[in-house]
Length: 140
Image 1 (cartoon, helix red, strand yellow):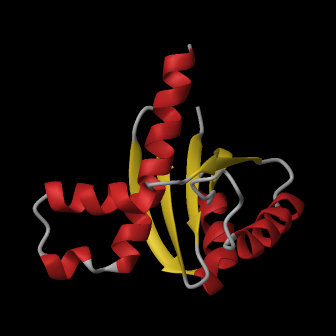
Image 2 (cartoon, rainbow, N blue to C red):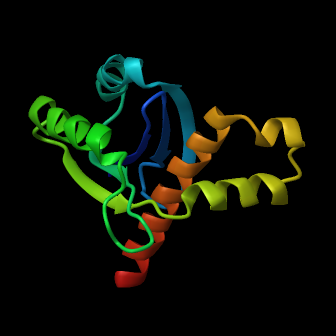
Image 3 (cartoon, rainbow, N blue to C red):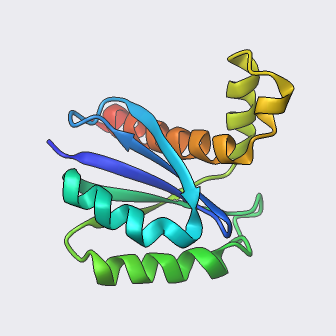
């Protein structure tokens, strides 16, 4: 099997997580400056086989799209043009930052580490991916 990549796309930073080849577990890959996303993807796709990319899709509590979509939608359009053979799926990312902070707290990270936004973005991508994997497993 091939991997699934999750992207928590942000204006400044982008968190990335990846599944194992058996698509059972999600692992934080890294957080990169958003300006470097295309270079990162090019390098990563050269090394790994990725069948699907999940992109965090920010929706407000009232189910209305978030303002962040003005950055995310152009990225998704550009991605599908550049990588037409890779499926892209938008995944509701509500509460992922809050869950990431809670995971950091539960993990015993110091307050200074919990303020690390790059770490939060990477953990958020991991939560997006692990939730998706569990949902697909439950559907079977």
